[in-house]
Image 1 (spheres, rainbow, N blue to C red):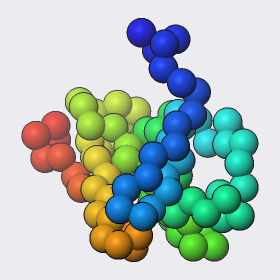
Image 2: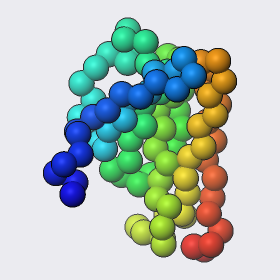
Image 3: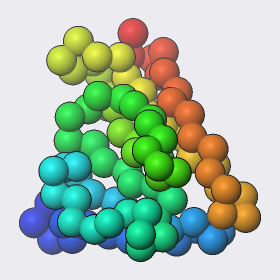
Image 4: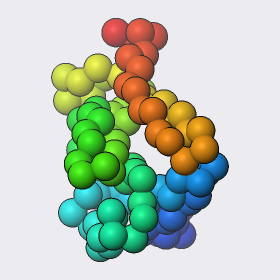
Length: 95
């Protein structure tokens, strides 16, 4: 099934352009220059949210049973009129 998914995808939600990909090393666009507000990736399962030059870099972590000693997390991205607010949420069900 994974071979049928695109390597990257762009979505636009309420005026915010978001770039989706699995591995950040596959990033092949100039995010800020092309008007992206966020990039969402996940390969490392290391939960993080970083703001780099006005672009959010979001890795939601892993939403299942603990792997690699990491807590189960997900990311919530709220978008209102093109403004983003991102937060990580710990999933206590998998402690």
